Amino acid sequence: MTADSGDPRAFPHPSLPQPPLRLAFDAEALGSNWRAMDRLSKGARTGAAVKADAYGTGVDRAVPALIKAGCRDFFVAHWSEVPAVLAHAPAVSISVLLGPMTDADARYGLETGVRPVINSIEQARRWVDAGGGKCDLMVDTGMNRLGLRVGDISDPAIAALDIEVLMSHLACADEDAPLNAQQWQAFADVLPHVRHRSASLANSAGIALGDKYHFDLTRPGLALYGGIPRSELAEAVQQVVTPEAAIVQIRRVPAGETIGYGATFTAAHDMRVAILSLGYADGYLRCWSGLGAFTAQDGAVLPVLGRVSMDLTAVDITAAPHLQEGDWLRAEYSLADAAQASGLSQYELLTATGPRLRRG
Ligand SMILES: *Cc1c(COP(=O)(O)O)cnc(C)c1O
Image 1 (cartoon, rainbow, N blue to C red):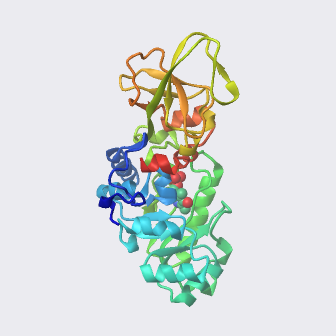
Image 2 (image 1 turned 180 degrees about the vertical axis):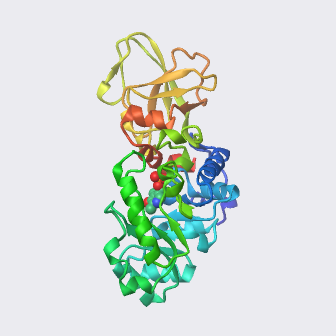
Image 3 (image 1 turned 90 degrees about the horizontal axis):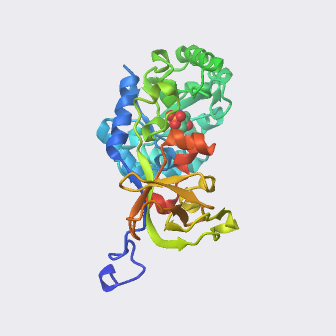
């Protein structure tokens, strides 16, 4: 059976309706953010961290926008994230931060031409034993997360590598911490001892630490997607994604009745309430219960009432009598403000988006 004959399993089915929620995505803003990071990176090349489905914004729209802006270096965390990037970018432009954890990872890297980021002597041996070829190397300069210890850089297994990008990662670039200068120094000390073509240290916040942190290649993530890790970047960064949801039901709630799970909100007066098709399964988390707000097209601000549930959120539209079922509302979700209000990080807010929202 073909989709035309009405096979209900066909995906996407030709008459599958549009979902009543979406993650509004501003490709121009993403391109503009990349160009801003590129300008701030001065003489260094500018890459992009596109791990975790481009920080929850969707690789399929983020990577083409980044390529259009001029980006040629992409970083994912997992090998499983490679195919989605390969659909848009050539293999030589992709690096996998977790490196070859198994022989199968190494084979996949060799067959596709995607570079592993080597994080240990063991990974270096595994890569060379599998056939080797170009790779990147992560050196840990004080974060104690992933990466080769500085004391291990003279190991023969490292000397056997063909290293494209020699990198390290900053632990506190979003703060003015003494560790930044210590990591810079440790990285600078390593460079003459390990053969490599490009050196790379700065993430988004690291770009704002000053020219000497840029080396040959910067690796912004957060700032590309609208996050502001340091106030110096606030001017340069535009919002990229915003959750939006349609009103699926409008109800009158008489004074004295309650709304939602736990009956945490009681109407003090008769209210007009809109139920939105957006909930914590979509990444609109329960921390927005009684705290978040939505805006209508005319700018009216509509507070969230009671608890956010898995698929649904109630908002007060008493002051917006023109709103009707089917109208779309936009979450108040300026990332820096949302992080302040919720206590979550901008990274968590971005990557919390659920699959229904991302696909919408
Ligand atoms: C995630 C990541 C980045 C990007 O960091 P942001 O703070 O999002 O700019 C850069 N390098 C590495 C190794 C990463 O894991």
